[in-house]
Length: 450
Image 1: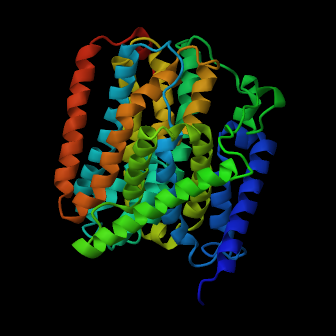
Image 2 (image 1 turned 60 degrees about the horizontal axis):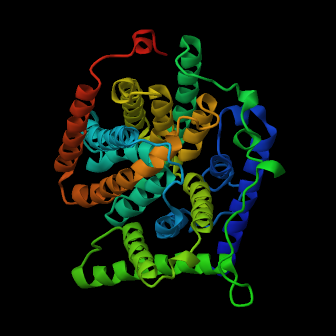
Image 3 (image 1 turned 90 degrees about the vertical axis):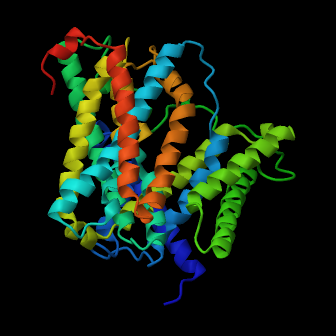
């Protein structure tokens, strides 16, 4: 059957209903709150169970699986307008350098060692595995839903259609690892009295437990930069993001027609066009009409729907075929992240546990879980970890982008070993530097870890 506009309406409506149901569960069930499961993940799992791949109770169209590749264009087109430097001055240069180096180390080792694990042990056991199978680990763990969608779309263009389902399964596994492991670390730290202050679950702010913000704690969604007489501010921001996403897609398609293949993944082209547009608006003095908070909210909304459609469209048959290598890959990933957490005691000076816990949260799950875990050990952000990370991300972000863009590009050209060795080698270099800077283990780490 031909895809119609009503199919799009039905798909969006079903995803919206699932999101509302997911938020209701998050606000109502204490067990869901204790696990910090985002509403979008609950909605995606419900869509997977009730959709065509499960009990077939929800009439998602066959095109629903293609939406993540479109939504990721919107996410990356909004990113350049959604960030700004923190206003806090509590951060120090050393704190930012340590957190930035540690975060880059986690990124490089997940990408490099993940691909090496796939090329060596996994392909030795299962010779027919794709060379890029190991990228699934970093795409789902340190990358998250956006990266998983991007990797899936890029590999699909190169003939590996199963990559999207595998990467989204890694996202789901990573979320479970992030929550379970993070809570285990917090419990251990409370017993060993490592942290200055551990907040019981009942004392966390309501927005972290239920997702509902009390009237006294609410902040404006954004600033009104246009008069509704001319154009609604939200309409302008949505139009800007959608236009830049389209221009990036169109430029990439045109380049593919001229060169015979796409020079960049679609999301990367959208990001580059958005960066150029931001620079142009800055030079003309018009950038102040683009509100970062509004852009960030649009980015978040696109990500929520991306997660729903991404998880709901996982091909369970693909997971069944790759179940054993996936389990081995995820097991290796958990062991790697566990070791990197312990490494945090050597990399960081003050507040090593808080910084390592925060990095654990986003390097295995998503930023929302990282913030929730951090709030259990530093409820008022007294240590300034979030401020340090915001500044460090000026380096972390480009490294993430390079790893993401180059993985399908190099692996698709038969350079999987080169990609893995370069990432792992750079990560090993950072590791050597980190070990030299902090030669002595803190007393807390000499005790038993979970």
